Image 1 (cartoon, helix red, strand yellow):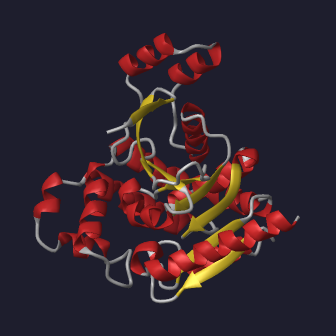
Image 2 (cartoon, rainbow, N blue to C red):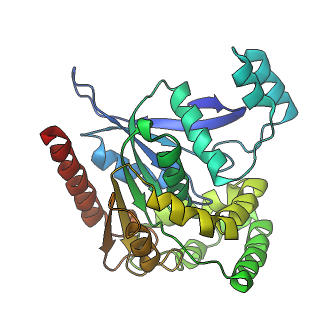
Image 3 (cartoon, one colour):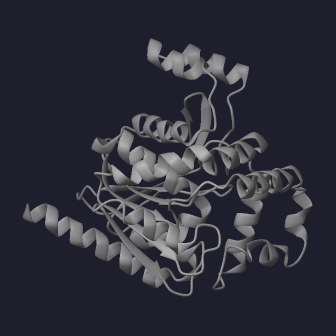
Length: 306
């Protein structure tokens, strides 16, 4: 399996490509959500691989990627670095702020010698992508945010969420994945329409394997008073043409939060897919792909016309 060192941490990545002869296709990068991995993007990437070379990767602390670098890994990264800047990045302590994950993506693109890409991101990954769009707009052609939005801070509900999230992250026995129908119960809150057992099982396994510090740390940084203040500002200043896709019955990030986010910028087009929840790309793949393809075609023709 291919790995690349990103800021002192081994990151898993893979390419989904189809032969194109001499044609050089644009690259689309896929970003997963909290406690997930690139695995649930496989079918979407396969469907779009006629038009794009698709890059899937697991974010730091999730899937097959490592968490914080150990002292030994940081020392090795320093030894292999070629510049003071790389050295300082390797030895400094990484945090679980979403801005740090945006910088991880920039470093990943540098490591793979990719300059300008399309990005398709989901849930927490979509928040990271929004930050990336504004920090590195010259590196993004167009963006697709699936199940993203803005929310208002409520101290009581946020505290309860963090407390519950802490219990969920702490008590994750690996044997849960072996019990029949647990995947169905675990995914019930995330879905409105059914998806194959293999996809439910994969997400459950990713959740159980997620690095403890990363899983807990990103709960506190992604659902916080700071993010409730930052994300509306980030959406308002977007310059990257963006499609925001919501699931009609999403309980994790309700569609109305996505609608409010899209209303903050004329660069964002909002669409809602009926009878889906937090995984519309899996629950109704044909509709999801049609909307994505329409969005990319519309913007491509506009760019060519201008």
